Every structure is written in C-alpha cells, then in structure tokens.
Length: 171
Image 1: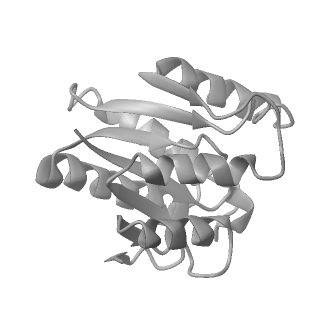
Image 2: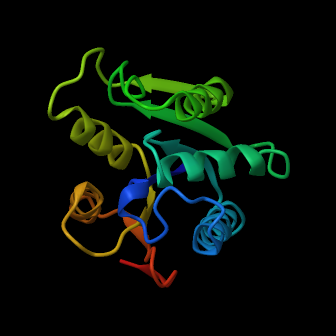
Image 3: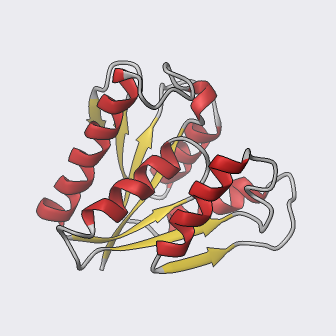
C-alpha cells in the first residue's frame, strides 16, 4: 500500500488568508486535487494522511473525501497531534474539523495533551508513514519547511506546491 501525507501553511500564511472564495484559494485546491489524482492513477497511492490543521491539511482532507466517490479504494487517516487541537478554533472551523474526522477511515492520536513539540511529533509520524509528501510551501523557514527537510532526510518523494505561483516541483 502506497501512502501520501500532506503538509502546508496555515491560512494566515497563505496569499489569500482565510478567504476560501478567493480565486487563488480555489486554484490552489484545484492544483492539490490534480496532484492527488495523479498519485492515485499514476503511482497507485491508496492511503492519505492529514494532520488536520487549519488550511492546507483540511483542504487536502476534504479533497480526498470528495475523491472517494470516484476512487472508492482510497482511505483517509487523520493524524491528531493532541486531543485539544481544535479547542481554540471558532465554532465553524471546529464543526468542519469534526465533520472531516468523522469521515476518516482511521484516526491516529499522537498524544492526549498538548506539549510544545506535539505538532513536530505529528509531522514526523506522517512522514514516517508516507511514501509521498505533498507540501504547500513557499520555501521559507516554517513548520512546513521543517517537515519537508525531515521528509528529504528520510528519502521521501516531496511534491512541492508553491502557494503563490502554484508551480509544482518534485524535490
């Protein structure tokens, strides 16, 4: 079974912020969808892992759930860094998070309580359990950048999507 994990910026670090109706966000989601379909059809990837953070993680999870209608053999795993991940989010985002989580085929809870390194532990878990990483990353130092560097150190195929230009490259 081949798998793919997602990493990417939070909305406040994307060119369009929280505005998902912005044409740049719509285009980013379409680019993500094309990359996911390509992995399914060309690389036989059947398992996807989302860290369930706001932004790219949730966009990718929603795309995978939508694609399950066309590709019923694919599965989605949520990798939860701690039980309180969504506790401080607004009500709409929490509802969205729990809606996605309820549809996942598998949930992996990395630890019960928040610690300063729980997001890093979640990211390492995802890389360690994936053959491919789709990273929406602008190339600047960040948690996403740290995850990309870890994936490269483990010899994983990283598909980098630049959130500003939507260029796609394999690292």
